[in-house]
Length: 216
Image 1: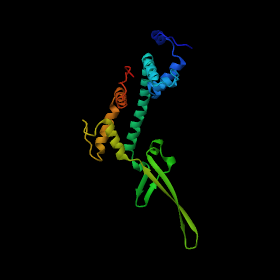
Image 2: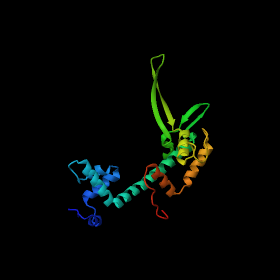
Image 3: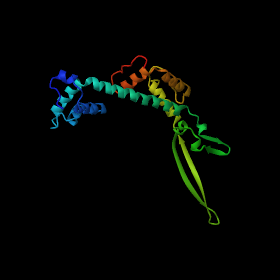
């Protein structure tokens, strides 16, 4: 299919497979020049021509590219929200839901008894078999299990940093191990509207502020 030479006519024409390839590459993070070259607009590897084509195509298909980038940003924000929830889970889980201890030592709950949320609070599990030889030459085997839980204090610090409550920013100053202040920080974060979370996500990645549809 031959694309119209008139820019206005091309803008109103349906997006061709080659143009769609260019848009896909830009959304994936390729430079305009690389995207134009890989899409086949300048197969002779002329850097200047590729850069020129990339700029022209960016202007022509800018609306489509921006829409795709914004959709990707909003999808990624869902992942950001999930990350915040997971970090909060790591900060506030009760270790006694996984292990218990007392005069008789430490007892670890079997993994099948843990909820999926609690299993994600386990950082590492290792198992060693220890053999002991008795006086009569018999060998006794026992299993030693080590369970390392996630770092709750580190999770609290990450929540506070995300909320902007550390590093001299305005907000609640946190002292080492100040779980109460970190809890308040996490609650404030949860209270933020989705538009604010999206705006923070975009700012951290150098993207323009998202346009939020009322009621979204």
